[in-house]
Amino acid sequence: MTRTVFFLLLLLLFVVAGCAVSNNPQRSELKKLQKGIIKDDSSYIYHLPYEPGKTHLLVQGYFSHYTHRNRAALDFKMKRGTKVCAVRDGVVIRVKEDGKKGGGNIKYRPYGNLIVIQHDDNTRSGYWHLKYNGVLVNVGDTVKQGQVVGLSGKTGYTYFPHLHFIVWKSDGRGQWTQVGTRFQTNKGIRYLRPFRFYRNTDQ
Image (tube, rainbow, N blue to C red):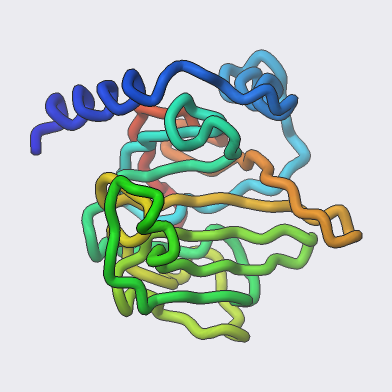
């Protein structure tokens, strides 16, 4: 599939899904951070979830019109079998790799293979839609930023192979909130924006 055809199909999906947007107060703040209207120089700077030197297209961003209308999540277009890397140090607390099905119907959601990593500041990062038997770590493993932890795929509720990435923060009382994060990229430190390519320059 050519890049132009892919963009047209993705645009069609957005149109079919409608133009409703989230009223989550984070949405407005993240849009301003993405555009540089407001600055953030205090939050953790994350590693992109793929290998140094590799470039991937961000097809959905925070609170995008399609499946992220109520999610502070990111979707990176990746071919099946692409190496997925830990965005920061942590401990693996959840894995699933036995899912074999995927498609554009919510009935496939339970088949999504995944990894969740706990970090030392009461945040967690999650990696979804990994391939069958595509998890390369175990629960309890300590991982380092940039370490290969899995292989991308097309399992669960998804129209095409990609990596769904999300970060949550705990309030210390059992409540978890999705949060936006900034990354080190070839374009500098950024809150990522959809329909842009980002190259991982970390060494």
